[in-house]
Length: 202
Image (cartoon, rainbow, N blue to C red; front, side):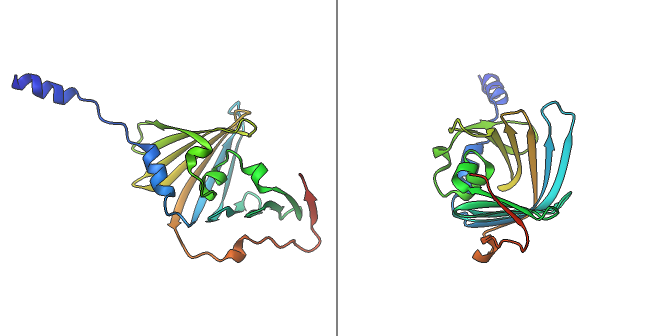
């Protein structure tokens, strides 16, 4: 009898880490965020890879900015209503409705204060790498994003993978992450650069 009990205990499967709970816990009480990031984008056929680096800032609700330093300087600023993309080399700005652009994206996931399950179908994953993973599939059909996968390490946001409808994969690796830092609203107001082309795309 003792042997049977020991055998049963030995063969009991390890419970899958709950990435859904981890994600909801992380978003709960999140007001602001800053991090350095490394972004790696791979084409659908695996034949082309683009690597970028920069800094990310978030102020909930619905304000964020991505400052790209390499390979080209670029700013992406969301002020709660519109998104502005500034290519510094071309001195060109494109801007569009924030709501239309964000559906199903990582920015919507982090910036919105609505429950995450309002926008995504969630499921746990096990990648066997020591991280806690969760997969998110957008509920909106008219979106460029097919799925997101998010990894946490010791409760901290670690990796974010995004797959678009063309099969392109983008991975964000976050470092120097600060949760709820003091950020100024002025960081999320876009000022049109002098002499720039200013193009509305919606």
